[in-house]
Amino acid sequence: MDRTRLRRRCVELVDKLDREVGFPAPWDLDEFVDRLERHRGRPIDLIELDGPVGEITGMWLRREDRDVIGYPGNTTTHHQDVVVLHELAHMLFEHAGLCVFSDASRIAPSLHPEAFEHLLGRADGADDEFMAETVATLALTRIWQGDRQTRPEGELARRVTEAFG
Image (tube, rainbow, N blue to C red; front, side, top):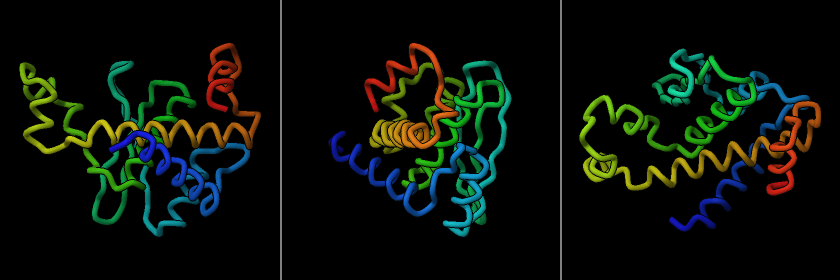
């Protein structure tokens, strides 16, 4: 799908979340998830995952009675927020819910990711990831605009803010 259209869908989702759920100020991830649970009428369990630094990112699993989001416990709070918002985007866009590419190297180390994509029909995997990452970035930008206390400081933060608003 065209990235411009995908980005537009992401902006629409963040606008809807802001309007219908509201981003807490000051920012509090647990409060936001509580609001989202009430809004959707469905529980969301956040589970801290442990593993080697840099290996575990996030995951979303849709269960019959709830959604489960795993996030890395061995990283900064800011990075945890990014990961959880990314997984929430997958959930809200109703993406597949499980990315088989995460374990591809363990399952079949000699098989290229393109082969998994072909075999499993996940041609939209890149679009799903683009959308989830875009929603996380847009949401955090909106949150930082409303809550200057949680905005990261430093040169990199200044450059990101300058580039993306």
